[in-house]
Length: 144
Image (cartoon, rainbow, N blue to C red; front, top):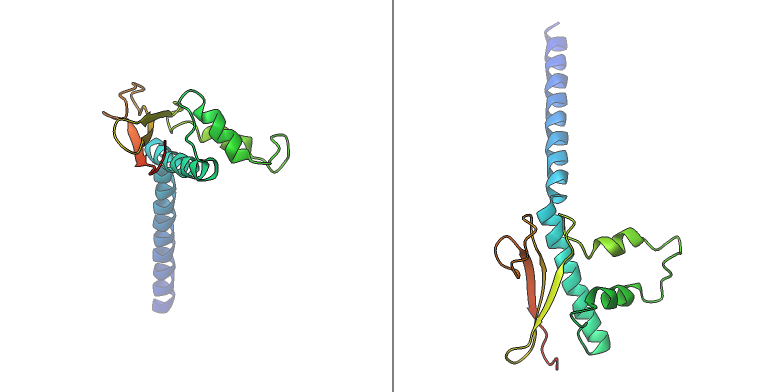
């Protein structure tokens, strides 16, 4: 009888621990999908794509049509209507976690240009990468 009670208590504790682990994992998954995390991930992806674009073309996308240039470059030889092309991802990469389109600036004041992609953040106000805006800034050396 005593052994059965200990077994039942052990099983109950195991189930409670399992429920706790599942809850923590679910909360961790939610944190990864928070708008700020989504935005930061996509900003880094845009930086990487821009660096690759420059490496392959020798130039930066212009500020007026940057998203189209990067989209075309990212597509390469893929067909938009093919089943293996996830167009949702292609469009989403240009929007932050709050569904605002990312901004792109090239600052060419001194020396090598400084490239900045930024989100206008949760308040939806364009603060040029400052305030609550989220930004990724990088320098490409040797760009005209």
